[in-house]
Image 1 (spheres, one colour):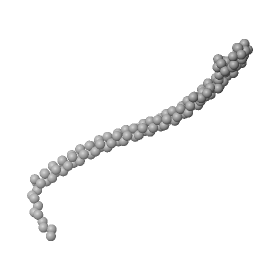
Image 2: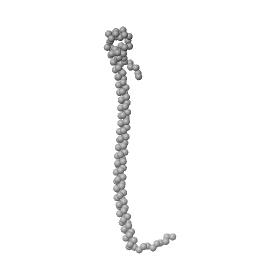
Image 3: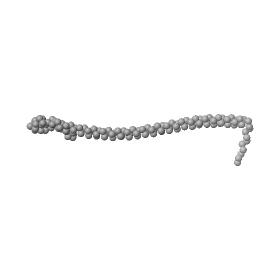
Image 4: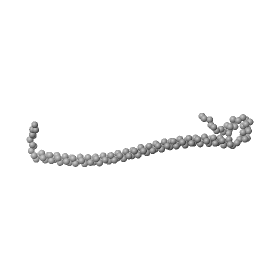
Length: 131
């Protein structure tokens, strides 16, 4: 514990010899009280300055963290938007593939029917030996 620079009136008086204590009571000057108050005021002022500086530092740190979080949030929004666009593009491509598959199935069906009709109307050609 640090010793206080200020001293109260009663502490001051108790430090004096009895005869001086009696004389000091008769001649007590308010300037001593003013000096004590001034010392206490300076100490309180310094404490408040220190607290203010600490609060400024903490505020700056919080501001930096807040800015970083805003930046990360913006990046996440951009990534989400990009994923939405890619998802929409994949849906379009899926629909196009479904249409293309249906078209190919129809063509395959036509081919199968043409092959069946061609097989039933013509005789089977003899197998040729290609040696």
